[in-house]
Image (cartoon, rainbow, N blue to C red; front, side):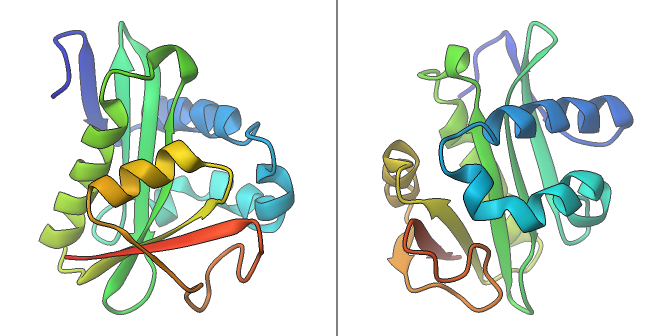
Length: 162
């Protein structure tokens, strides 16, 4: 669970979306990210409200001391599936279980929204994230259609049935 100083927040106003863009910018500095997601990332940043708000999507932030510490998002992928996106915890806040809390929140929201499974893509180098995904029940899969970065050798794909 989150400690007393950490606040899980569903993004709903411009302050939240501004904080999300700052975390996404930090996320984009991960080695290999720019090469893998260059085409879709700019559009994503411009359309956070379109992609990551109810009824089909969500964007959560964790704040500590008023500062953004982490984020996660989901959006509709196809008829029965959603895609989990942008799980990120700033390095200075890691080790506090924030990632697990964020993933579980998205899984709960996906289930409540009627999705039957959650898919995600990740860079192969993100081994710590992969361990978290497996711990909460994701299984490695072949690249789903319409996935970005589709078919990249440096990408890993996961799915969890709900």
